[in-house]
Image 1 (tube, rainbow, N blue to C red):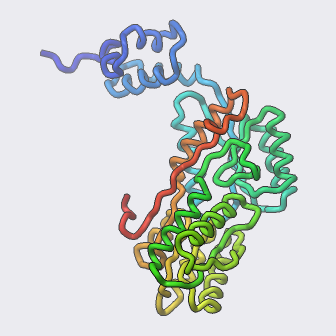
Image 2 (cartoon, rainbow, N blue to C red):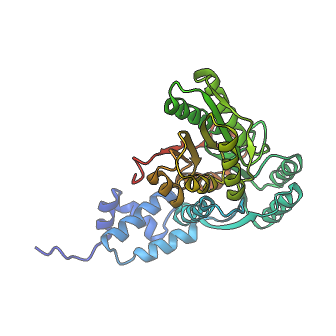
Image 3 (tube, helix red, strand yellow):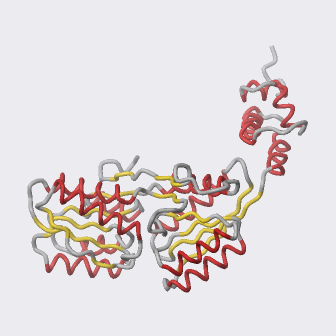
Length: 349
């Protein structure tokens, strides 16, 4: 019996779990085929070594719509944004129903007029936008104009519209804040004291929602832990490092330290300088090489990771879906990614 027969359409059909007629339609473009089905045939053809697999892939790509997406991220030295950008690029390359390219731009000047200009420039060049930004009347007015011109915009990581009346991909930031409160309450036990909070800025609605969630949980379940007035760190590690050392000096009853946005590397740098690690619960955002090392060395206790790969995949799916959406649907177009709690015990997961 010859087990080295050249794969046929029937072989591909069996591998894909489809009929020979369906595979024939994909291969010879005899009739329209669902894009997911066509991709299924292509994957099966590659798996069995079918001689026309490359041709199938080429024809699938030719039939797909082509879109360019503009992605506006914060221009910081944080490893998180580099990881997120790479994840978005990968998700776009792997998307099965459209040919996608992503054009990345970064906010270096955080004045509202500069951000509004960047949004306008991207909107002229792209079919849809994803934007990380704080809320401001000028920025919101610009986004409204862009949407009215027919270019969908997704708020990424943090809401930009105060009533959340916009497509969104990211964590439920109020839940993130309450989860930080839950972690603090269980780590500190019956101990009373103060909790330091560092955030990028009050206009970042996502950061503000986290602070509100943290406050609400502690007030309800751990009233002995008193949140201090949040300090603005502009997501900057140097500012965060200085603020951390200052908090430790001024508040001898400090029981917790929460960074609700970026700049967490500064906390790690500050704690690494001390001869003895203070007895407090330290919670940072985003799993990076540095934060994972800090967990393993005991400098910090918990990292709340936003899962950039899941975020990127959901973002690309939503940007494609919005190309055909007639109106904003809060049930379909607001996507919450659950946070992952990372400790020294699950670093390899």
